[in-house]
Length: 40
Image (cartoon, rainbow, N blue to C red):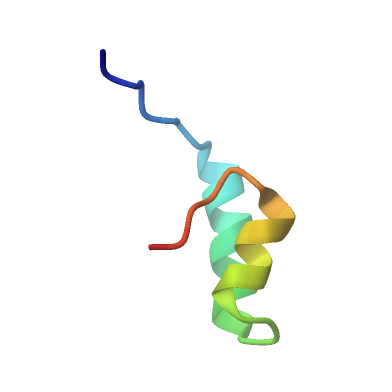
């Protein structure tokens, strides 16, 4: 049985991407705050 991949909206991706580019917080902190993102 396969899992369906999550589909994130363009708005969500832009918001998270801008947070990451600012470099204020590490990626894993941003991922924990948004819960749906997994860091690999």
